[in-house]
Length: 187
Image (tube, rainbow, N blue to C red; front, side):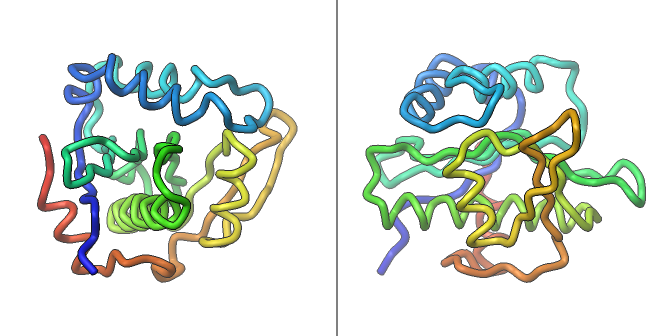
């Protein structure tokens, strides 16, 4: 069976130029979500916009899942792709899949987005991801399919950690598929 979407890397300028469409998609994706405190449905776009609006920093990539009708059906934003120091941790922003997709496709799209994001961070030299998880569903998904561990600290109750040395799993995206996705960029 052919995959019904492709994963493409985009840069800050794409996010800025397509901000109205992305804001609508992201807010639609999160409007019914059970959000962790202190996040709101506008937080994912607001944080993505803030990062994209800063002076460009090499090593931040955004991913989009685009279906055969050229519609954005998912995304993963603000992925660290350039390791700043040997012992630094990667951080990543929000990921989403449009809620109008069938459940089995939502899962597959999310797995592919996460596997490509993890591969980018791993290749940059990071050994782990430390990030705040914004939704209950996102936290369950990342824990179940990738082994993210909930490790809160006083100022970050939704903090989760993932060991990037783990192999990709649960995805139609093989290492070759990741290479293909990275080569097929919108930037």
